[in-house]
Image (cartoon, rainbow over all chains, first blue to last red; front, side):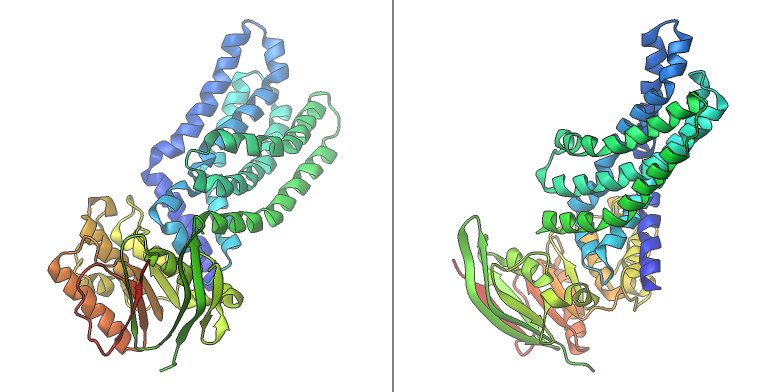
Length: 224
Length: 206
């Protein structure tokens, strides 16, 4: 019961902080929209090509936008000492870390998910393909936050770990990206997508259970 | 009143291949204050971080009620509160929101209003922390100790940026906590006026 109170308090605090610091909330979203809008301009008058590569554009842009907001996950807590307070509670640190990651997902991914239908329509995507794309984003974006959290926790003590973070994290995003684009490709050719989506769900549940523990350990290492 | 015991056996700490201190033993029970003194760089903060369990001692072990704090792990943190160099406050949240968060992570005791009253911050409930002065922030961090139920307070330079009357107030709070069966481990550069009967001292020398 007290664990649940603490869990909710962590999520609530992070949401409140983002609300007060609204630039952190808007930056990734603005980045996402801008990157996607640059593609039609760069491609020129090629609506069919654009329609073909639209899911890939959206996925890569979402991935980079998520990476952009990733670094803030533990940074300010580390600097102002609140991370020490979070470690020094009777609750399992891995679950409090999970709460922070959930908050990060709520703040960085949900706005992107809400924006995607508009962006997809702009790129000329069909509705049924768009629904599959949204499903893959819904299953895949929590994975980005969960895996990213380990890398952020590891690079915390290094000061400016921005580039290193990308090098650490992007290779780990590859399996998910492959299954997500596989699902969208299958949907475009009218094939069943169940297999791909099952794999994505499996990746989601595996990371959900396996990543909070190493993240907690890495945080303790960064603090000592 | 349950009796608590903090015991250090042969603690050593190295930094950058230099031994800061070694063979440190002490025994502290409820109702006592441990004052750690030493020049800059003597390892006061390192010692406090070892006592919080955030840092591993290079040698030796720490015991809380005769159980190693390594084995106790999270259970140790039910009884321990720490204020480091950083206050652990969020600038954009109000004083009240900061304390509410602290209470949600621990066992609440005093109400937030009472805790703020005791550190003379009454009326600042809805002020974001970034509008508070350095001394007021320090006092707000101390209010966190008052509104949660913790036995052992570990305070790293609690008097930093406090004025004379605030230092007196904090001393009174520390004495009150100790008389109620709590214990305090602290470092300080300031002259303290804590009653000699309650205080044990450790001086770290290079």
